[in-house]
Image (cartoon, rainbow, N blue to C red):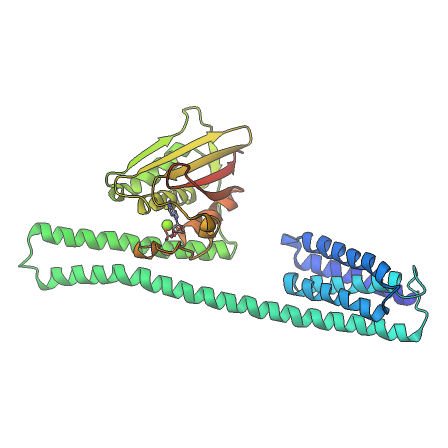
Length: 360
Ligand SMILES: Nc1ncnc2c1ncn2[C@@H]1O[C@H](COP(=O)(O)OP(=O)(O)O)[C@@H](O)[C@H]1O
Ligand SMILES: [Mg+2]
């Protein structure tokens, strides 16, 4: 009796400790899932115990503990381990339906089970951490590759242009000088964007993106982003379809401008110089939906979800400048506004990016 009360206390303390540790982002799902898994194993054990020794059935519980540790970490695994232990003792070890243990050998089985369960939890969650660490390292390498490529090229252009102006000052006409300077300015702006994208991404990753929502005129936000892209549009046709009675929407103006800048910039990049781009927004009582569509090369079916991942670029995009960060930044910003973003095929040709955001 004393033994079972001590165990129940332990389970409560562990669970509370885990809850406090993760208070801000506590997720009940893993606990409910493990509760169900252990219950199913116990139910199966009811049938198996006629044919198998309890020690053999305990292996099933250990599998559940390993699974919990690999997938959700140590706190959850300890919870599973202790809950399994209690179910095992209560239902599958004679005398049944009590925490009392009939035979001394079962006491060893139970203690061994608990210790092995906890040790496995610790080992498996260490493994999980080291896998995560490896993934982070991989991401850092991707980041370095992307920065060095995306900053080196414009830097080379700027250095080249400025060197020509200094060395061949007299040989250059006014127009040639102007062109070289314009080139340098364009490339500096590009570099500025890459660096600012990287900073945004770091903030989104750290959960430090500060969104200040104020009622905004959506049309104004979209028009300002298009204005910044005017020199890239060439002969493309852009239409913006937003009703005159469209309500004001609470959003962070500069960040939402970044979202539309990135999305329309993609439309420009992935369509021909005579393509069409359409922005259309509709609203209902609770949300607004904005579709940004084009008639360009489109996104292959299997990449529709992946393109929102950091650094992900569809195969074949390599010939076009880009870091693969734009859409993941858009996703971070839209989600911070409580909205969602997804990509679809444009029924005719090209891609559609759909944003959904709360109206209030
Ligand atoms: N409008 C679009 N049409 C076709 N492909 C697109 C479109 N928008 C995004 N993509 C694909 O999604 C990938 C990720 O986009 P993004 O994160 O903006 O990175 P980047 O533009 O730097 O490549 C792009 O490399 C491209 O393959
Ligand atoms: Mg982009």
